[in-house]
Image (cartoon, rainbow, N blue to C red):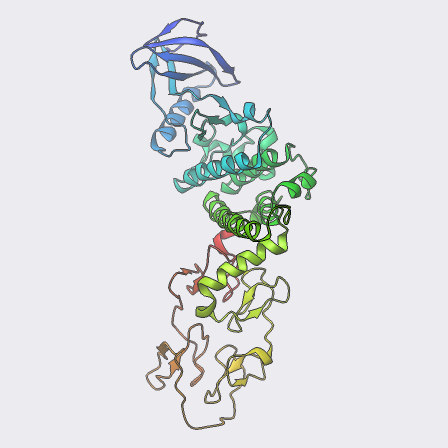
Length: 444
């Protein structure tokens, strides 16, 4: 039977020579050691055996199996797991320090964003594998010489599908409200990541009852652009359903923010060259950052979607074909004077052609035809599915303008992704909502 053993400095433990104790926790002790054969420094994790709990060792074996199946640059790899001198031992690479230790020193905004990217990648990968970590915290993020962060300690994640659902396992300071009640989900890990990002960017912990704006909101707004504040707010929503659904949705949203920041830096560099020194203070407000994002979107998709209108709420580029604004979800208000069609639907104020018998954007009553002739239009790209009609259709028509049948096409312009609900084209890099069916993009 395995026995609890405390290793001493310079003691040999199999092929490992112990350097000292790194951390003694409630369930295990971690030692630094040298692999005398490979000549590399490692960490030895040795559980405290509980004779009254027959499942204790089995739990650690589950942790080993979880760690063994995860292969990602930002997840701490398992080098070995075996019984050495009658002691169950897990061996991993030894980092420089934990993120917890690193946060005791000043952290630049640039470095905070770098760490944030790596943490989100790690949790997104774990969620892809169907694994909830359930104890994401700075002490479980290991920093290495090359600046890489690696997520460690899947000791609670092992119980994702059994004991953890009936317990509040995790570290109290980084525990989502629903996890404390024994109902964890992927969104609980998202919440924990949000707490870490908040601490890195503000230097302050966001604490119970997790009201927003947080105590560090002033510092946060000084260091990051408004879109990052919105991102963090969503990750830290008290209600799980209001957060990103999992690490992948969080990662997709973060990638959008990164692209916006990169574009802004390029724009700022150009302005600085033109204006000369002292003409810009290097800061960015929310309106200007969104303007850059809108400009980039118009360049990529403006002509395809005919986004010549502006949302009345957020000024984002919208098309009269859209049901709602893809940026803020407000209803699209059409301006009859700005339509690119020859007539106006009296029901929805969207543009129509004089030879159409019905509005393709709404289900209003038919029109009194102004002509019996059908006019050609280069925007036609499909035909009605009804054999008795076979009329030409334009992208994103909801109804056939000739017979009023609901269209069956899955409109998806080149370069766009497919909405999971309506299957029409959306831009996951820019939009927050599907403008055709109003579904949140990326599970927001």
